[in-house]
Length: 526
Image: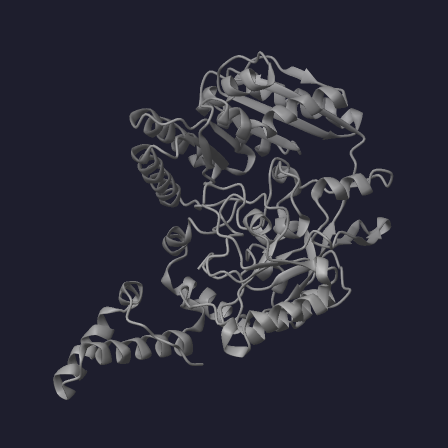
């Protein structure tokens, strides 16, 4: 690989101190001119970064021109997925350069729409040959900037791969392509008596949910994507296709070899393109009932949650909203719940089992000072209740029209939840920030929806500093900086603090093995 190097200010910034030391030594011994000295240092820098640690070079230029340029790449793409399957339009590229996060749009150079795993593989081989970054794109509902094309390259928009491939009702599993969304799958399953319960709120792509290890309101009962993915079909950076649990295999459990499936779950497109996922399904409960209960304090609400779980009540959802959030939800959805720390609960089971679950839960909540339950028994009423919870993002935005929002995503052990929420609310008040809180209290995961004016640089800085403090507060309490949104762009430094340098080196080694050219969604996670 050769480089046409020019001594620009940007390139100066990439040189390490050791490069300049070496350069000064060479200059002193051989009386080289400054430009020659810089050239030697640059050559050493790129050789070291691309040969010794190819995956760490997040500023490697796009190298399509080395093997024939775009004039050869574009016809090659069109030969794979047709004239309509390739776009260079600015509006299309911008649409695929952003998600629902606060990170700015980073459009790719080209967007392609493959229709099959074979086409994904063929496109990946072209990108691999021409050193083009690959950015997978599902529905764009991510919250951490995971679809931004930091180095340009090619966006693989997977919406045309939208088939439900294999449904095994008697085995409670199904295989789907990446264009199938959560709501789309459950609509397909409507007459089977089965459903897929993992519910992050957004109607996200199921393969995208696997890529970020998403979860949501039902995780306390049904687990996250990590517990519900049985197998993955993945196209690697060089175009090769692997099946993480063996081709066509879908056992409910296995102890065969390394757990490659969970290596790719949560990898955020940095190791390969997920082109099929095999998922666990569940029987639709005979009966469902939801309830709302308010409490005098955060501590009382969390104590009730812990005690409900300790008694073995198989609660399906137990969501926490603080007083600021419930007030916002009341205004946005024309509701009239008391403005106080609140739990939204849902129970699944038979009619008889629900009676027992509800009785036990009511006794616990009332012992902790909770109000009487406000019930939602029919599907329509339950739908309105949970729509209010899922609309929390938009309700928070409505507090300050014209502003933007950013959601934090820390998760801590249940016993530490009251402490971190109380400290977080104090931090918000002390710094004059708007950040209503909603969370999946049953697994210790909560979100501050930070509403800010992007044109107020002082506020933007204060929000950034707050989110850093919150994440480190969670780490100090034995928690994680991200429970379900992923690392993306904004939490890479926090990931290093959380995992430690040796674990990060292992991750980097895995990345280097699977993607030695650093083409898969470069600049994310690591």
